[in-house]
Length: 105
Length: 312
Image (tube, rainbow over all chains, first blue to last red; front, side, top):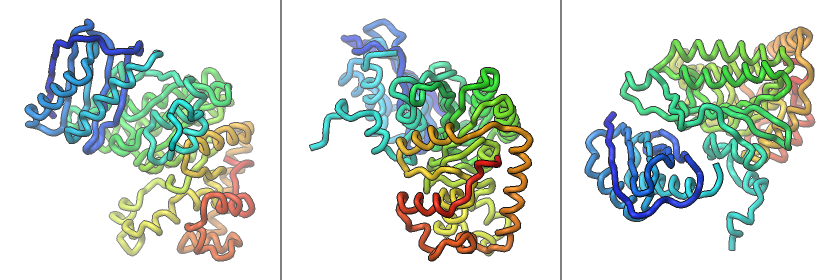
């Protein structure tokens, strides 16, 4: 297992009122993303535990692209990864932001 | 053109969602009344397995089981759903403790039914001792809850089936509903082949696996009382039907169950294949049973299939 952490400054707070959301499962080629609204509006953090070791550069690129596209201000993402491909990671991150952007608990 | 998502009623969504393909969370969301699910020990509490780290294996925040309460046709229910894609839905220490705790809560209250959405290969080998203990604790908790008046209903239709200790727990439930892809057994196909040889059981013969352990056979034998088509709405209706059917539990029930199982062994103990059993049950062209569509099979099972309603 390898642990990675990314912190970004972002311009806007993520929409919606939910305090947390979870998408995906930990399986081969898949991952789960737990997202929680716990940070100041202009910060974003992503903690990753991955079974695929040595892909830090790919994660840096995928996370950088995600933060730029979605501006997930105030959100902390916690990822358990079972060796998902970059496109699957992007999809789950987008799903997580969309889910927490809903109104409700 | 398809209707926008917001125009689709929850029942329509549940009807068009495969139970087999859905995640544990989606199953619960669509099985229960819309928006009624409240989780206990949710993923944000990060109650992960204490063992997987030692093996350098990935954890899941809910340890592969979602437990909580919700409403079914406005009546309260406790629910547990295993995630069959995380480590084959296997029982570990935390995973098992969440189900044990739920059953004990149900026992204390005494009147609220428990729905267990099984999707498991059995005990998680990386935490085998803790997992085996968990199975024993859950079996005891199921029986104690039933003795206190709680109906414990198993719903089986996931990709990992219901194997190993999961099969034992299912055997302790008040009643089961199963779909065709749901399989119920203790030893899985590969385990039987490994221990007894390919002559005993060829695990690569999928048709053999399905007609020996699959939902249709379990329904015809009376192990499951309701056969559900593979969608979440059908499982919701099956759960409601079973909650209505299950009677009081006591020593007479257990005695009847012992007699039911002994009778089953007397009737079919010499049969070599499920098709022989179906033929002995009076089903004409029994070899066509695996191909029957759900509605035709349900009609057949209602006519010929056994139930365990006076027993269990």
